[in-house]
Each structure stands twice: as structure tokens, then as C-alpha cells.
Length: 266
Image 1 (spheres, helix red, strand yellow):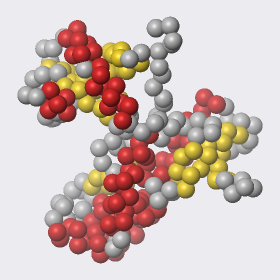
Image 2 (cartoon, one colour):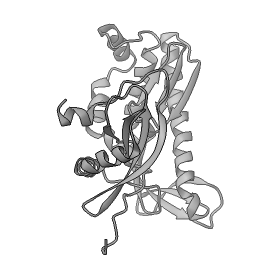
Image 3 (tube, helix red, strand yellow):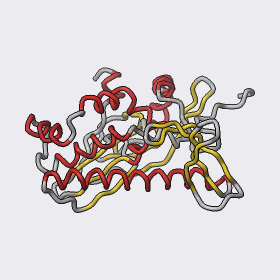
Image 4 (cartoon, helix red, strand yellow):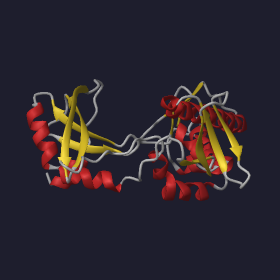
């Protein structure tokens, strides 16, 4: 199998979950990349992949593989790891001064250490939009993350209920998570799940994704009939799809830490 195909290939998943085998470090060009190692019963070779949402490198190995071989494999492909990580959008941690989009509008995270409350929005005198965070510095990232998830669930629940009412279908449960491979999902029992990161996108994008998933309550496929249902709920779907194709991947960089380089004397 060609090297490119090997590196991009994801092992087939079975009913049994892969088992964790620890973390190894790969050094390339004076940077250290942590690689999470997992064993999988159906894996026949060592494979690497990058999780863009978590900025995590994952190495999958056969059950009978060795950690020594895994480390040698990862180190051999250190250049590939570094190149793929460099292509990811620059990380934007939830910290004082970080600018992040909230409903598509740039907001500057502003630490208000001595203020009462948790997280709220303000508009400065110069018109700058602020996302204010009270409390001690170590709690900032968690508080911002919690706030965004709550706001995402409220907005997605309102949009989903509205579309479900139009179709006369019932939503059994709605949850928000940090999904890395899709923006939303719908189960056959009527449960909807969305990425909380949709609250960072413009409202019309969030509305489109809600219409998309609710439409699956009628058509559990992506047939022409399904897309007619989506278009009936949300006629401007092409605009939203274009935004996702152009800017959706950028949403995954928010709330993730920066990769630390090695010291100069390495």
C-alpha cells in the first residue's frame, strides 16, 4: 500500500472500542508533538491521523504491536506530522485578549478578575464587542467554554424545535458536544446532537444545520427527497453550505492550546 494511503487510512471500527496504550513524543525540527497511541483489534498495520478539532495526533496499532515499533513508526513520519499540524489554523485558546466569533461577530475575551458573575457580553465605547469573564485566571477557559456550550444549546434547541414543528415530527433529545467529524447528527429514535462550535458561526449557518438535522427525522438519508425537505425548511441553504466549506474548519481552532516549541538550547 502506498505511504500516502497508509498514513490517511483509518482502521475499520468494530463493535469493540480501541484500547488506549499511552502517549509518546515525536521530535521534529525542534518541536515536540505528542502522539496518542491506541491498540485496535482490527488494525493490521501502524497508521497515523490528525484530529483537526482537538489538534491531536493519533497512532493506531495492532493488538500485538509494540510501543517501541509504534514510536519508531511515528518518529519516522515526524515530518508528515509536523507538516499536517502546521496546516491547521493557528490555535486560539480561551484567554484574555483572544478574539473569537460569537454568532459570527468578533468578540474580545476580556478578563474582569474582580467583577461579580461568570461570563457576559458588553460593547465598549469604541464599538468593540467584548466577552467578559469574571474570576481567577485558571478558571477562564472553562468558564468561556461552558458559556459557549450553554448558548449553543439554547440557540440550537430553539431552531430545531421550530423546524420540527413545521414538519410535525418529535425530537426526543438534543445535546451539544465537541464533535470533530461532523457538525450534527440524528438518530433513528429522534435524538439530535450538534457541535457547540456552531454558536461561533453566523446565525444563518446554525439555522441551516438545525434544518438539516431535523430533516433527517423525515428522511434518514441524503437523497433528492431529503434535500427538498431541507430546502423547504431553509431555502437559503446554498449560502450556508458555502460558508461551511469556506470557513467551517476555522471554528475548530478556538479553545485549543498552542503547540509549545523546544527551548533554544535543544
